[in-house]
Structure formats: structure tokens, C-alpha cells
Length: 84
Image 1 (cartoon, rainbow, N blue to C red):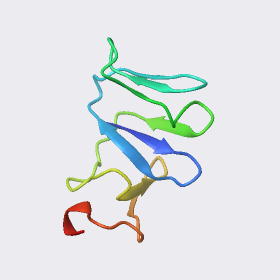
Image 2 (spheres, helix red, strand yellow):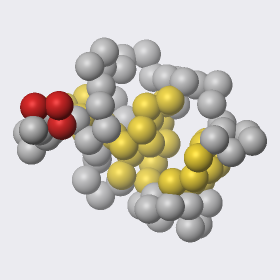
Image 3 (spheres, rainbow, N blue to C red):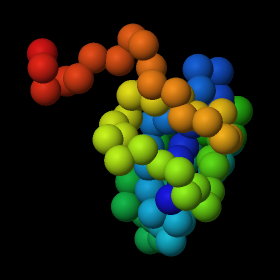
Image 4 (cartoon, helix red, strand yellow):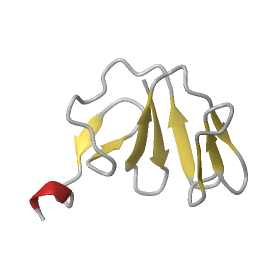
């Protein structure tokens, strides 16, 4: 698996299979080839892509965890959107 992390906060924003292409540009990120979607608020200045992860969380959801390249930590401010 691979994750796209917002560098400043460490929040894991996206979790993708390793075979999904991720192209990080100066003003956006393209996911897929051909493009499946474009992430307009993340780019080479504010995002980090970690690949070949074997220790992903089975209950992963966007922003639920931070990731520092090694360790997953549950975000204490995360609220399950299904409970609201």
C-alpha cells in the first residue's frame, strides 16, 4: 500500500494500492494513469508519498491516522463521520 500524507500535520489523507500511479507536481497530485482523480490541495510542497507499506491500519479512514514514515498514530481529534 501507499499513503499520501500532509507533511505539516502528518495526517494520512489517502491510502492506495502500490500499483496505483501517483504523480506529485508543484501544484497538484495526479492519481492513476490515466488520471482517476486530481488532488488540488496537495502538491510537492505540502505532501509526502510513502510506498510499499506493509503495516497499514485495517480501519484506516482519511485523517484518522498520522504517519511519519514508520509509525501510525490515531489522530486524537478525529471524529467518525458516521457517528455525526
